[in-house]
Image 1: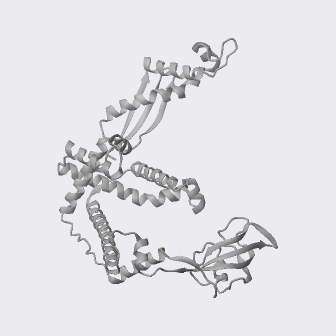
Image 2: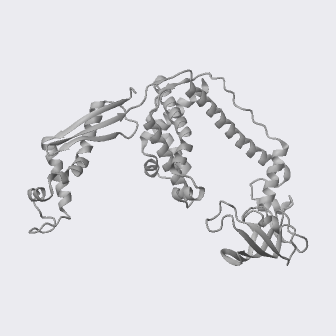
Length: 414
């Protein structure tokens, strides 16, 4: 491909000798040679005893950074992904590196204006408002002890249970006063269904089977659960009265009409955001489809790695590692990479589209715009300027983000 260059750099003479010296000084720290203190062995003795070849790999590691900088200068191109490097030759006189450098692909814009996409008009129905109000009432429900009656879907049953396989109590298969929400599907299939219809104080045996995807020691095995109903609780929704509005705590909302208006505005705002996102996605899809660009596999792989790193960080904020997630789901790293590849390609194409639109349209971002954006962001996130800039990667990233937004505005306005 036109955006790929292979550059060969040779390191020799004083530069290579310096790399060998640094490699030796690194190795000799922990070296013990008879007749010398630890770390005090002379280089010529080391070479005679071990061989100069023992220094080659470390010397290559030392020399490769300067060699890479020379390769970049010789290539004279905007590098967009990590280069690959191989050692073509190494001996006492020098080393030869081959760098494969990948630059920004050639991009040919197609039509990116007046794409004929219409933003969806937003409406809010009375049924949607009523549904959301019922959701609020459900959220603010109280659990009340059910004095009479049977366990039904939606109740919370406080139970004692004991599970046995082959007549033996299983580890973790027993509990006292366990609150089980009927319909939550917390337990294996058939457990909650078996409790439905039971009465307060009733004891019952449930003959069930562990699923085939359960833990290795229990999957597919028959199990008997002895269950006793200790207490039954049902959710009671609050009435839409003065106490409800006080507990709701929404400023200015103290009546049903005001609540309906408030909910309607919230639903409308959410729908408008969704409509805007859908509108932009369609614009970008059409504009990128109209664009011509050949994306190297290495660029795609690099984007996938960045996405996986971001996903891993998101999981860690939830207290789960990527390794744990893959164990829970049974996924392999190649599955995650395959799943993310289409999104990675779309992200790369969108980025190249907006960057190229910026060049063609000669988009500029002023220092004043950058400063105003930083000030606004700091106020929004309650951060100091240096903290914000450190978090996002400096003013250049602010400038880049603003230029991308301006390019998107041009596509929107057509």
